[in-house]
Amino acid sequence: MLKELSINNFAIIRNLDIQFREGLNVLSGETGAGKSILVGAINLILGSRASQEMIRTGAVEASVEAVLTVPPGGLCRQILEFWEIESRNELIVRRAISRTGRNRVFINDQTASVQQLQQLSPLLISISGQHEHQLLLDQETHLGLLDAFGDLEPLCRSVREIWSSWAQKKEQLARIKRAREEGMARMDFLRFQLQELESAKILPNEDEELGREREILRNAAGLSDASNRALGLLYSEKGAVLERLSEIQKELSAISRIDPSQEHLIEYLVQARINLEELSHLMGTYSGQIVFNPTRLAAVEERLALLGRLGKKYGPGANEMIARTEELRAVAGQENESGLREEELEAELLELRRLYLETAGDLSRKRSEASVELSRQVESSLAELDMQRAKFQTSLTISKNDDEPIFSATGMDSVEFLLSANPGEDLKPLAKIASGGELSRILLALKSLLSRDGEAETLIFDEVDAGIGGRTAELVGLKLKKLAERHQVICITHLPQIACHSRWHFLVKKESAAAETATSIRMLAESERCEELARMLGGVSISETVREHAKELLEKAARGSAVRDPFH
Image (cartoon, rainbow, N blue to C red; front, top):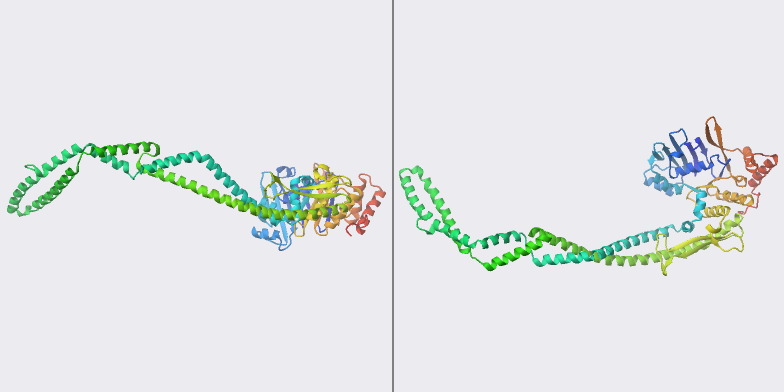
């Protein structure tokens, strides 16, 4: 329930503090006094868009603060606890906007966001005005109203979740198929490349090793001659190095006999002989291995030529081509995995389609049952609002395309409200036949039916009296009074037939002083209400007859006998 509203420097309001009460609160005043500005201020608290134009001329900041009571254990308390915002019996919401563009939000003195306000607002206050009248003409809103009436949100949520999963997987499958179709020619080329590389059976560092072997084969004769000459100089020819070492050893032995300190020279010689003998052995072996093999040389040349051709396409060396082969194998593997995933997605889509049809079908059946009851109750409520012979119907159809249900997040159904305001007229869509007064009463009827205890406990009606008057206005007043038994109702009205049924009557007044204009609001005492109703009845000139009429309205409203109360 909205207990207090404080407004500072908002539009033409300088400072305004209002205490609202339980039951039916009515706000009246001259046109342009600022009644709708109050609704704008409350909308700001509920998270609506803010702009610098809302700030009073000459002020640097505008602020709105609301004090509301929240029931214990409700969803509002749970959300506050989830946000780690102090939860108590009173909820204090404050919002400030400055000319610098800064926008500050506080919930129970803790910094919050506009998005958090928007999430809380449906649990706190419901505002019905001209905008909602227009929404009622939009067929897209009718489905939500029917679901709210039938308490079908849990089932609607299940349908949304299944549809969301189905839509996501459908898009995944479409992407895979598009990629497959677009990549078919590319994959054929990649498979050709992979086959070409795999058939070559390239070994690591193969090009380098074959290059060295080619050089040896090309220079076999020269290598053989050089190795044989080296072997002859070391070992086999007359006067070879090893033969001369024996002569050197004799001389060193003679030296060491005379000078024993030089015996270590012989050790160096012995070590040199061992190394030279090993060298001569290796040269002999190497010389024996060198063979001129033109067949092998041709094979090596051919293999290197193949690696050279492949290297121009896939990489400069054998190792790079091997890496490219692994990349192509990975791509080919992904294509296989993609094919498997495509099969999996198709199976999952079939199951989700079955589950969607089952759940959405259940929702359709429950909507059908709710539509019958909603039509009956709206007709009953309209009769109480002086539309006794009006016919109201909730038309429910399953949307199809080529006899196949159309899947959507809201289910398979299309809903439209139809009205026949007068006997003999066919039922037609609201947008085509409903007048402003009829829309006001239909909206009030729906609000009465859709309001639930524990949900938005404060209902605000702005322009609920559009297009009505006389007896109809009084019936609307009685309806609001009845609704106020379950909810706090705040109604902005120009009609005394509605205002007389209020429990609390506030007067909104615009006053000009010096160079500024300001809006004020105050609760009227019982003695003042008659004068305000007289003003609403008589306008500028108020006669005693008008005052008597206003007094009669108040007295009969208090007795419930201004007209026959259709609720008792």
